[in-house]
Length: 191
Image (cartoon, rainbow, N blue to C red; front, side, top):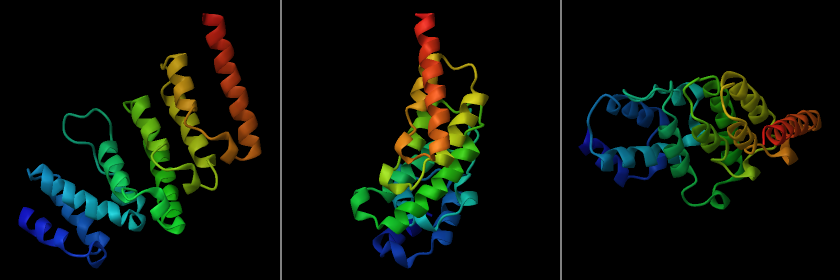
């Protein structure tokens, strides 16, 4: 498998279908291949991330991980996608990946084992210009906070910091401001 990956990596990435690359990734998840080969495969997939579907990205987490889906893998794929800089990725491709990310974040938000830092890494993985609206992120954040009700107020504030009020629907902004001020008031009272 490593030889195939090495040979494919020499080609123009756009010559290889996303479906083929993702099929190879699924196979390699159960094999022990070198980190170098895995990185090359992930970079080829990341280059074409705008062709993915939500089902492609909902890969189970590695054995020994407590969370449901392999968030770290997705973060690496995103890093490959924007490795040349977000300014170099055509806006249509960037927005398609942002829409896909919104769906992914909504899917992983209810995972009770997903740490706040990983949730925020997903939310902040793309530049603000990638999204027309943060409404989906807002709803995923609310869901995350409901499932993770045991978070400290500081952690809740940190999770809320991933939202961009400039890009939310005005009704959501009003709710967000109430939520943030309520959290801040609660923090002040606890101090």
